[in-house]
Amino acid sequence: MKLSAIYRFYRDGFSAMRLGRTLWTVVAVKLLILFGVIKMLFFSDTLQSRFDSDEARQEYVSRQLTGTP
Image 1: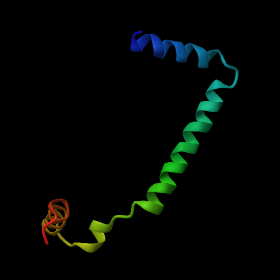
Image 2 (image 1 turned 135 degrees about the vertical axis):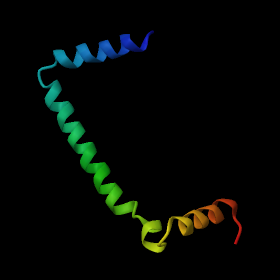
Image 3 (image 1 turned 30 degrees about the horizontal axis):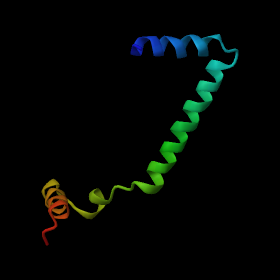
């Protein structure tokens, strides 16, 4: 089955729904909010706050990946 056939199947199915666009909009908004909150809470910019230069960040990441002290 071609990828385009799968796309058309879902496109036609959701366009025939009465609330299809509204539901997809709600899903998209919820995902944006969810990922935005997760990014703010769990993925802080540690390297930016701990190191002043790009060279220091590169050296730190290199040492962490290779396991050298």
